[in-house]
Length: 73
Image (cartoon, rainbow, N blue to C red; front, side):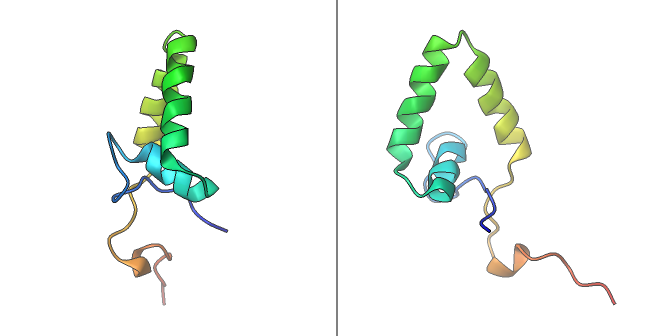
């Protein structure tokens, strides 16, 4: 199962749309377009959800081993 991260490589503002597109396996431009249209039609609700998502979803780890939980002995 893939984990959702904000993208470090496909980032325009915060990397949330790039990470979501990578997680879903679709084009990031399509996600960005959907977010902009939804933000214009929702009177700011999508903007609030986007900000909350940016605060809750972590950035992609710099090293692949950072994804696994630490082992305790």
